[in-house]
Image (cartoon, rainbow, N blue to C red; front, side, top):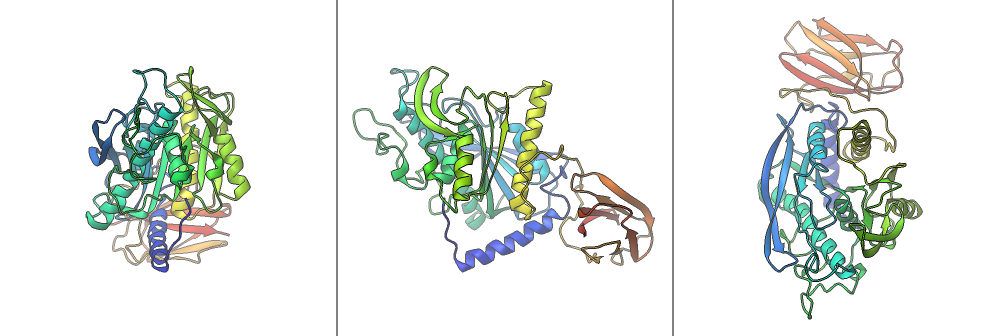
Length: 439
């Protein structure tokens, strides 16, 4: 979806980016810096008519980093799979993602949305009209969820302490469809004309009023997202993707028998033909051709990803998925280089509840960038027992010095490679973080 920014909006975006960059200094959004999460269940974000003309309250579960003191956090909304006829917000396809995103420092939200098709299982086999309507209902709900947080941030006290300029949407299978359509279906005219969005006629499709935004709640606020993650989903037509549209990460098995890897007819339960769709391979090709920033991971010789389970193959697939998501999202939250590859498992580096990852103390590191050595100004601390630790970008500890009692302490490079490092300082019962670059 193309975006036009005013000068004021661009200025606020820069301020928000500076705030997020300060959060990133402590390894947030790159490592598991929070040991666990807090969960708020069944928060209502909207309501709308289902396929059977009955109202449904739309609920979501919100995962927040436990003990977090940041007030301007990035948000990832996650949508479950289920072929638009099943699934739920507590499914095993989305809960692990939300838990791990919260441990990375995001506010992660698993949403419920309207599922079901008008003529299935009662009234004959489903067709393209039923399938198109089901996708549109879900997209309306996803947009309402995005608007909920922008409205809450503007007039609701920002209950969940999110940055309204840092909202991402991710989805698995049917949820991947939602993410892609929220990003790239900009106009109602792009939606198939054979789907009745007025609720009229002899075989009406209910709950589709409200144009491209829908009537699921929180009108008057933007449903734009900064980037999307598509896990084994598909798009109605890649022609909707245009220069300037949202960046996308796609992950897909090349032997997927549920959602096409390329462009093909999608079947419900493998037997009811519904629509011709463009899968992740076609999406990546289109993104490359029109200049949309994207990453694409193919799970070769694999079926519908992520396969949920405890086998070695399942665990490896999930590990790859969460690492790719971490790398992709961190590019936008922390202005880090985009990395479309697997670079090892995410490390656990607990900052602790009292950690001060944001610039709240006068702790200088100089020179920065450094070549052979660097000095840390520790004069802000009264204690004579200071510990300094250095971690590389993979979260591996490369240096530790304890019992420091000087106002300034100089460390030599000692063969450390060029790149970014996180300095963790423990003093006065708290922990503080700074970022260091070695040339």
